[in-house]
Image 1 (tube, rainbow, N blue to C red):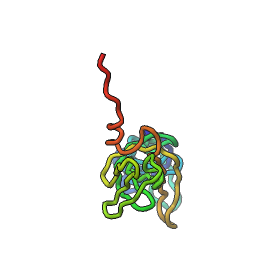
Image 2: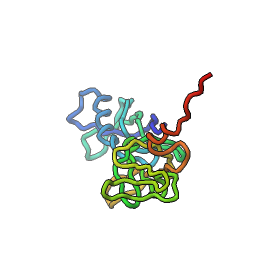
Image 3: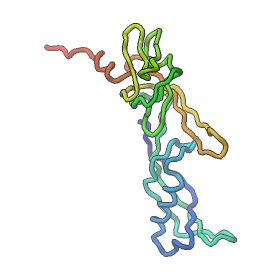
Image 4: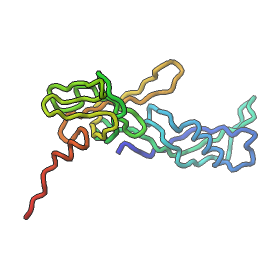
Length: 191
């Protein structure tokens, strides 16, 4: 499963305006603001900060009125493994490939990996791919199953957050549009 619980350690700044309030509640909110919705190279896409344990003893830094407390907390993250099979929804289809929404990220499938056919054609009017031999069609909104072929992290522009890039293939047995997979299932034997 691409969803994991990860334990992390960091320091949380408690501003003077929050002194006297429950420490763990303030720290949890600070951690949620800092981590949720971000990609971290070490753990993946952070979906949620689940819980936090915060040291009661804080450190004061000269010139700063807040206190800094050590926090150990759990993150719910999304990070698929190379070779993992994921289900998703086709979100966009272009001439060069398609984007499959898998969890909180978009995975890219190159045109040659869309289906197990020698020739796959792009239909710009319907934003879909059509197999030459089978005439199978996949388009925006279809449910599909794909295998992870690569993961990378990049920063699109200077000063922006890290992005998790996932490359996928549907060119293997048991992968593709879910409708196609149901067609292939053999009928149950009667005994």
